[in-house]
Image (cartoon, rainbow, N blue to C red):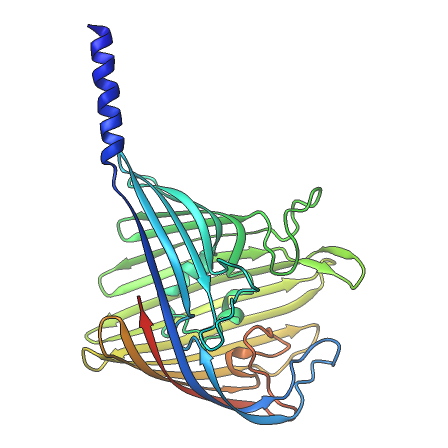
Length: 374
């Protein structure tokens, strides 16, 4: 009798496994536009050329990724039963204008992770992922991290995608809690070096609240990048960021605003950058297919290598018209002062490629494009 009961239980377990649901989805975005930029420098500023961007010129070009970075990806989920799921995401970023791979040539440079999710406990994921700060501020960016003219590196840091990351996400009613730890990010160094546990590590945590028309979030991020000379590893720096943001929706409009405190120190404890970053903006749905976005960004740079530099600010605008659920056309434009678009300046970063020509203090960019989601 006991053997029969055991056999029935085993058969039931195998039957449950056979009936578990699983799926793999191919998805992506193809986004392309025609762009004009004025006061563009003729060369990339580097330490070797004294951060000289060269002569100022107008630029006309075809650009990949106006509102969204062009990408394709695979997303999979398997129902393990008992409220447990296994999941993975592999996401490749590419330039649609020339077909090249982005994110430094990584095959899945945007995201690459695997994990488990419990309906009661939350989600645990492992791999290359977005940081806590990126996730929690995403719903409080009026332009939704629009690729072309969003100062995302100035706001979040170069480590907003982190390698070798363990991450937790839990949703409890109106509250979302996220935390992550990176064992070693490859932005500034190699990471995960024997005997150098702190090198290129990073971590963050925060919560968000959303109920009815109101939303709010608070988050912290720290990154400990490698500091090296031309011949030797000198130690690890410390880049700290903390942010608060809020939003309120009424009728067809939604307003958002936020503040991010930032401090970056070298391996010897000397402050390299101290700034206070602010943003405010709004979305307005004029009609079912037409949406408008206006955003203002300002960075109060109180200390950059001991100097008080001119504070950059930027105004950006988006008009987005949906032709269908999957295809839209758009106009995006931005004007910046005391920096190139996206705050590309030696005081912030050279991550987004808009370098002010010598003697210039403003930059204007505008683009018309089409985006298709699949």
